[in-house]
Image (cartoon, rainbow, N blue to C red; front, top):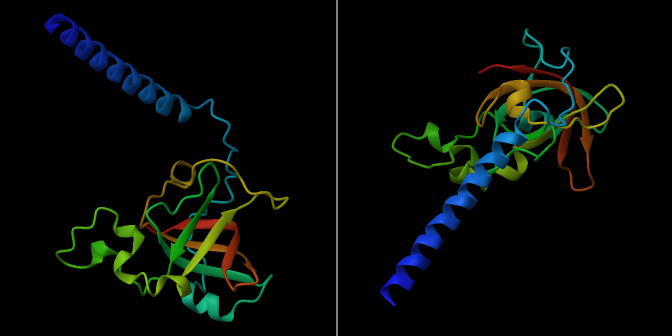
Length: 178
């Protein structure tokens, strides 16, 4: 009986190791150069900061559907501000404090702005990076734009409003501040 229990425990450890190994392989292969990401046009990531950028709240209050906008904010607003497989992410107005901006706050995901959740609905915008035909590009914005959560960006594009007043910026260029 003791041998059977030892064998079952050994089998369980090997099975767990096998699952971990295949998950690691899958993650590695999905970020390989052979992935099906749409190449980012070199004109999308610009090296000079556009003039006239306004914070998210100001653009949300003033921009109408189809207006040209230059908007600035920090990537965040939720624990996962990225749209999986697409060059799209949410940004938050610079007036809001991420948890990492609050001395002594040890939040593991400061970009979710959990200390400012009551202010988030009026202080966020979705950024969608599109090609010349207006098609949302696929890929990983973290790699394509060299950004991460809480990166400050300036985005040029067109405002798109939905019936609820939510703001999406259909981007034609992105400047990464930090």
